[in-house]
Length: 109
Image 1 (cartoon, rainbow, N blue to C red):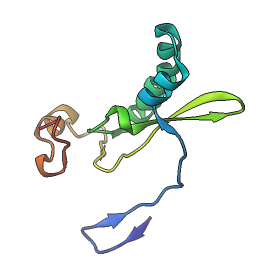
Image 2: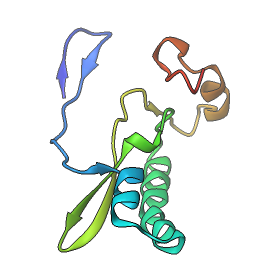
Image 3: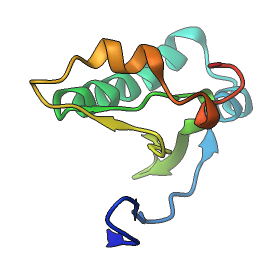
Image 4: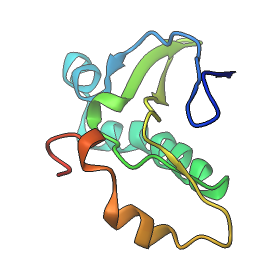
């Protein structure tokens, strides 16, 4: 993480290869059961972020990439660009309801 100014910051992460989860499922012709099994780690990742106080705020199917790792599909949640960190003193739901319309996807506005 590097500082641009006192009000702005930027973060960089490693490049993740993978296909959007919907494309991966369609290409692999996964059954409904297999799709649900693939989605369970996605739910666990989002829940882990929530436990750590990070709310994604704009998760879309394109924000879940699937790559093959050790010959198994490995989903990864990406693009926490407008994520919000909360601590115990903040009221998360009130903050989420307001959002940042200028930075939300058209589907979220």
